[in-house]
Length: 477
Image (cartoon, rainbow, N blue to C red; front, side, top):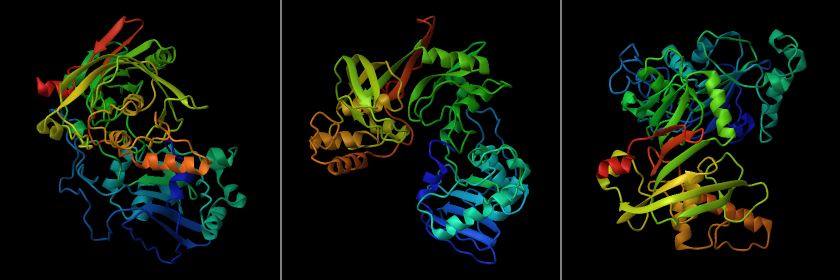
């Protein structure tokens, strides 16, 4: 279920419980849970939901009169999933449903009935990889009410679990592990758990790209792709359809799906290697571990960066933003990059920024920018973005890190891990400063930032591949 546990997912949503005899469903306009059960023995559903109210006579956000969906039409991109899933311009907040199955049967039929959704819609969700199941529902978080805990105990009582053949020989922890539903007719036992991402994250740029033109090389064991910004290399928790791996596979007419070997951020463009076999996927992973893979980046930044090695320490968490410290902190991850070149270039004009959805993050001067060539010595998530921002030179368009960099520039000392950090007399004051610093960061950019993985090589340069010109240089030339 991704990087977050079920308990943490529900911690923000367990608030109330209702127990009508007749099934009643409403959708709140904010994240609010909905619990339903028919009697003391059958818990039907709990849910964290958001969006606009729906009723039996409603129209879905992207419902089309067209009965068919095409995913393999080779034009510049591919025909969109326009049938029932929310439009790519859908602005509503995420909606995630957590269900406990009250009666056995096919997964598609149960979700349709319980959530009052059309079969085609649910089928598309399953195709996108947006539905997960577990044999036994996970334990509620500490914030759960006594009634919520009581119902959990009812459906997980030993006397109930003993009657389920699928649980035999498994620990409760093993039975609570979640897996992606892969078939619409997958059979569900009563008492099983379902997590349904009703509004999966979408990547509309997948349909705008000429994917064949983005292929850098095709070898027997791998494919090198010039990844477009605004796309996911291998997918997200709730969308494994709109990915670079999927669309590159189709563009090349391959019968075996390409496999992800490494990641770069969705908002970053450039060289990505996709394996054609599981064996080579393991081989390349080994090369990465043995530091035989070298990656060079081009970064478009808002201020000049000194040539040489930049060293920081990154807080060990999967949550963004990534916090950076110049001083060693026990347990924090070592981060290092080398700036090879730094030259002055024009700041992208308004037309270019609009085309690539470059965010206006409030940088005070847009006369010039600086293009840096970077040798990435350690490969941490958001490393280049976080390190350059901590150095006072955030990436152009980086809505997550530039606002905090500007705030520190205007008020030195705001960053509790920066050069001008303050000394705190208590742990409480320090924790407050960290929370306030995190709050100064923005959200993940929509499409692009000024960052390109311009070259990838391995085995001491025996294999070297370069990306095309970065978005800011192509349009400026």
